[in-house]
Length: 481
Image 1: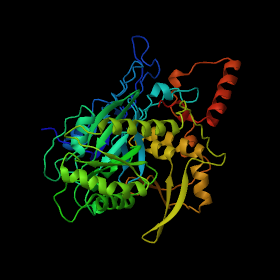
Image 2: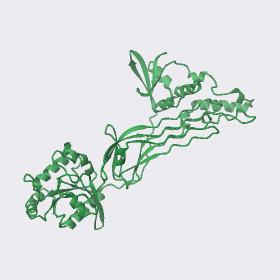
Image 3: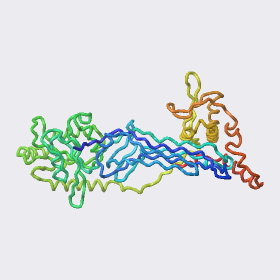
Image 4: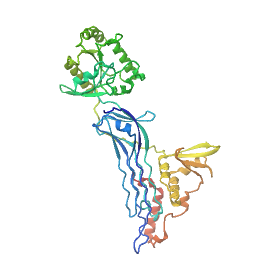
């Protein structure tokens, strides 16, 4: 038997970026033909996509850990690594994506709507991409960036136009079975309906969907019974239908008190006050039910409700009810603003945004300066600290970004600890301030005199200009996304 699951916790991991390759082209009579290391491939994304054929989150309940493939490393001969394959996870229409704190990240409504839950890491640059007029033979490459790791919560909120609410065994499942082609399980005991049932109704030129929500009882909004688990399925509905049992065998219940109790639960749940209501007095095929319906109808109409007497068993009053619902659904659709074409919103950074922050902390009585920012943290992850030249390249990048200047302004002194990254995953080192980055002091790092040849004066001038231009350029602009 198929199980309905409408809330799961999902652990997704995007693919890691492939490492760049440090290689030098070699062939007969040309043993040092220049750097030819290729770039690493991008890691695959984890993408949630609405699929109309999926109606439950059951698959993710059984296997909540999902991972995309990694990018392949670059190779010599200027061969870039293959990108990792994106992992596309189909979800039902109406799925809401939240973080662990309950903040909404995405609301997926409409076939094909997608959301990138975890972004793959970018691949590292090979030494061929790092070569320049100033650095002709880099002996290092950049490492690939790890992919995102995310813990998210998926909640399914049924996308329907009409919601049937009421006590257990009020006849909601029977009503939806005769109004549409849905075939829910029906029995005469409470909580027969354990999952929301969805049906499609055609009334004239209007086609709409109708859902019956598992039975509500007093205290449902606080977690009693099944109501709290399924009240979320009412949120997207345009019309609420109170299905009241006029032939209940419980002496302490009557249609008016049932209505008051359910309305109180909806009020406590919140966000449903603006939905139009219709009251359906069901089971009038029972003699006592018909008499009770006639007794309470004036009271309900006095409260402003549109009241319909029906019998799901005898198929009485169904046509009038279906067209009344179609009228309200059509009015609700007409009142909704038309969907605008997708627009790209550009939010430029502030002119004074340095892209990183430097904060002072105290650890064991000693000062620690923590550097946080997307660029410096990524650059650290891309650095092979076993390679002195790669470390020098990192020093160049941080210096051009202005990190050393900000550390001086924050009061950092020689020997103070500097941490780049979050507290649980940071690279810590003792700071040694320099007038320029230590890597620049090494001179023309990455060059090999065996590549040098006499150059005309004009060529030397062009090379010097290229060096000046490169010193002002942000190397990160060349990294592939």
